[in-house]
Image 1: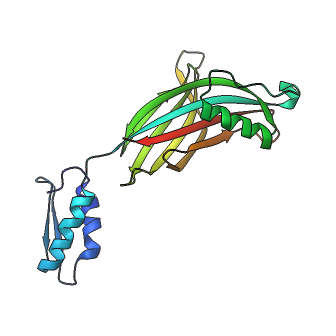
Image 2 (image 1 turned 120 degrees about the vertical axis):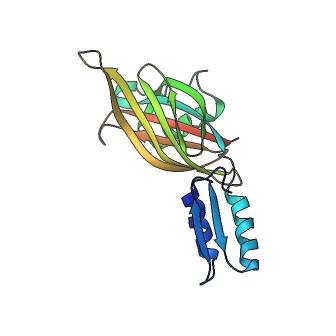
Image 3 (image 1 turned 180 degrees about the vertical axis):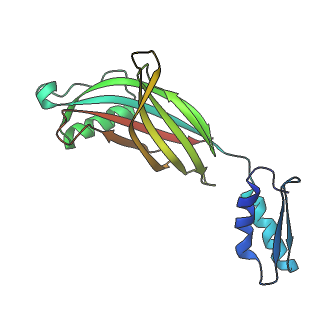
Length: 204
């Protein structure tokens, strides 16, 4: 029986273990794989399926979005990060100010959300910005999380009051738990403003 994972995925995992005479048959209505092969191979198949067919893992993602402004707009002095930022985020901001042209920072929103392998979750950071996270997988150790897509979106309304959504930044990501990750987006290389998204992940 395959309880948690797609039956076809389980068959793909099993197939490389089979001998030339081995077969695997899917029975979708029963959610069962029927595997025929030598006894020692069936033992390996059983062990592999036990480690593969696990309940979807959860991951907690903490997101912080802020706007960086360059020296032409923000002045010569770097804006001191206020209490809106955590210690980790303040450290990132200080480092960015040392190595990039953006030296003034405005917090736009922060939130923690929990997602599940194989599903998407939306984090509403403010009335204007949100992040859509598509969680692909969490490594068995819980140390690495793979996202099919991380999308920073700006929402609004058109003249008729219909919601509009603009993808400002979208990419697949592989993130290490316990580390701070930063993504940035500007309209063009010469822009005097840029959005920075900070992500921290924890497997649950």
